[in-house]
Image 1 (tube, rainbow, N blue to C red):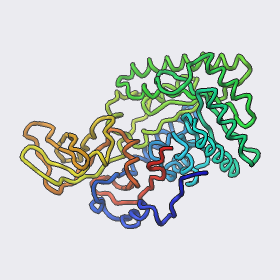
Image 2 (cartoon, rainbow, N blue to C red; image 1 turned 180 degrees about the vertical axis):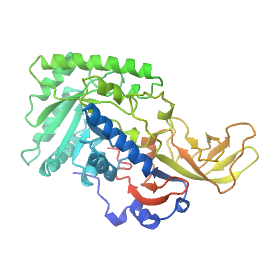
Image 3 (cartoon, one colour; image 1 turned 30 degrees about the vertical axis):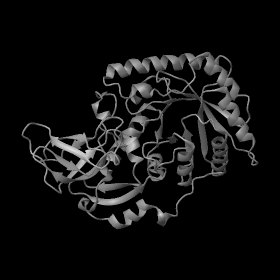
Image 4 (cartoon, rainbow, N blue to C red; image 1 turned 30 degrees about the horizontal axis):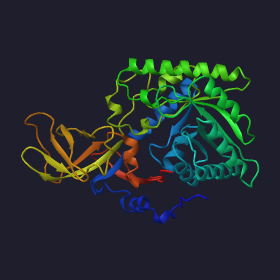
Length: 400
């Protein structure tokens, strides 16, 4: 049984906030708040869609970034074939929000979760949708098959990707023979459809130089090619290789091996991705996600804002202070749960005044979004823009 109950539309705090703020200027946004520059986000979306079309690859946006059914639907209208999620609860909540092509690009092992996966596969089948799942063990395949077989309804099946470890050192079976054995195991179960290979190299996404990323993905492509050849030698076709992220997707697209790309962070970008040397083969993406904050205390050498790490994730480092035209350059230091400490970037530089608004670029966009009920969408820029809508983070806190 699905333990996640969809809130009535009028009950979601983000939607209530949207009704209050719609049409107001950015000054009306209370702090700290997570804000999307809608113009920048839509340019990012267009650039990704154009890239996928030009290079003739499928694009499946990773929705663990935004956890929002509204944004997933927007991406699919722009050309994405569907979205990836990272757990069962995210899949259930986005499906409830009208997203009907979902890939849980992760392993699910617990029997209660697999029962939910099977139920969701049936639900999506009934609306002509599709569900997929990644596996990296024979036991995982067998448990999934048992869960699918236990459903009273007939007709549903689920696409299953064998995940291979192409360098991340996280999930994934070894390339070659172990992956062949898993493909053969999947092929034995009527409700399971062997859909291809999951080959995501997360560790390559933030290698800082283009050369480092190119070398890492070349090794991944070699592992995928070997595995694909060995599986197909048994008579089982490998219909699709899927993977890639915001840091490397142009390399996977150019390989001729990957048929589907899974980047997510490109939609918003963050301070960590900004440290990567840009690959000219990839589109130029803009920062579109910001934390609005206010100066609440001043002293001679620093000021304090009201955005501590309860409002933005710090696993990939501190946020960067976004400098608007005419603004002073500042650095951010961790002040704890509720506070950020800001100093002038250069000796003797100006500090903002008490009550002044500032904008932070989070270090890591995905877990930052998970801290907020809603994303406040602003049209017309951060300085003079107006609130167009508030987008609910439907799967906030959905970790199972």
